[in-house]
Every structure is written in structure tokens, then in C-alpha cells.
Image (cartoon, rainbow, N blue to C red; front, side, top):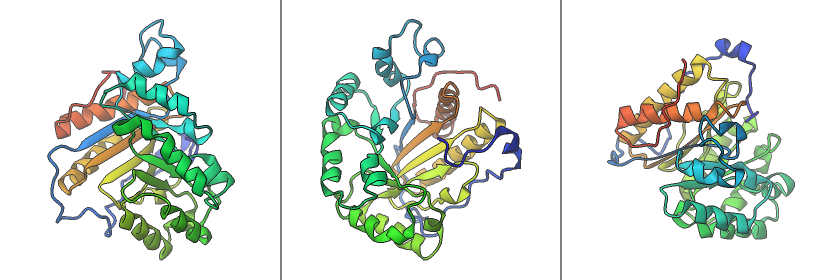
Length: 296
């Protein structure tokens, strides 16, 4: 994930402190703690040849990568659906996953977001929703990333698009233009999401701390975390997230989708494994772990 990228030589100058919960977050001190917080952790890809040996068994063929991935992680961020949606592939993915406690989290098509820019997308939207129905309960959260140059002047398009989505559908919007995080438009768009039970992606990257907004608009959160070469700060930041998720559990959060990203994909499973281990210790969860060396 290139968004918000920083050179490793500059990392020590970044204040990675998690901001406090937004005062208008749907979670509050009046929330009812959940006894079983659902947490799904994963990467953005499963087809990484360099994982054969360290992650997948020696000799694993490309056709078996997904099968092996599902045995080690419980979610995948499907970035490839941004470029192409294949219904036959989706059907096959569901068959490979079978009844595993696994979630596929597809990214909305660039035809909707970047080519049509949310204009005249009724048919495309219906096609996307219908395409993933075969996954059934294994369809997790879906996320839609708006272009960097798509700002609040297009607020009307966003609101019209939201009207196309069934209320309660697992939709999370990722805003990148800086002006979305300025008042009063920030409150307007967040209130619109909350009214329909949708979410706003929380993105943890070095150079854009505004996108780490901490305003939850539903009891399901979608977090995209960008690490920097297994720098010490990566693990400290994950520790902070463990504390925050523990707090949100006590305020009534029901579901977490947490996806790790690294420029070097060989590092991504290390972050997933570390996060799962820390959550298991802190929250008593039973997330799958790989027992990788974290080398902090």
C-alpha cells in the first residue's frame, strides 16, 4: 500500500500515537460489552511465491496457495477485485474455503470509483453485490477506496451511491482527499454512514494521520495498517491497537477486520502473527498463529 508511504530513514521522526476516540464515535461509555468480539486478521494477497517454505509447505503449487492461506489466516483483503471481478473465480474461492471460519473482503471495482467516479453506477453496483453472494457467510466487509482527487465537491455523488446500497450491507468507505476530514463535511458524511450502518475505513499510515480518524459509525470496524519493514515502531503501533480494540470491545464493538500491509510482502505475515498473538494474550481470543520470529 503506497498511500501515505515514508522512507524508512524518516520513520523515527513520525508521531505514531493513536488519536483518542472521536467524540461522536458510535461507541460510548453506555455501550454494552460483547462477550465474543469477532476479529479477522489478514494480508492483501495470498499468492506470494516467497511464502513457500516460511509460510506454506515446501513444494506448494500456485493453485494451492489459497487453500494453504486459509489454514493460516482467517481473512483476506481482496485487492484484485478492484481490477477485475470473475464470478467463476469467486465461486471457486468459496468452494476452496468451504465451511472454514474465513472471510473474503473484496475491494469495490475501479469502474465504479475511478472510471465512473460514482456517477451512473446503478448497474455496476448491483453487479458487484450480486457477484459476491455465492460466498454466503464467508463474505466479510467490503471496502471502497475513493480516488485521491475525489473531494467533498462530490459529496452528492457519495450520498446518492449510499442510497443504492441495502442498509446494513457490510460496506466501508476509504476517503483519501484531505478535505473529507475537515468540518463540517466530515460530520456530514460520517453521520450519513452511521444512519445506514456503514463504516469509514481507518487507515494507519505514516504521512496521513488524518485518515486515522477513530470515528466509528457502526459496530464493525475495518482497519488498514501499513508497516515499515518490521521497524520497531510497527510492533509498538500494533501493541497500541491491541489496547484500543480491547477498549472498544468493552464499549460494544462486535467485529474487527484488520489488514496488514508491507512494501515487502514477506514481512506481512509477521505482523499478522504478532497481532494475533497479542490479541490472544490480551483478550483471550483463539486467533490462528504462525509462531514466526518477530525480531523486534
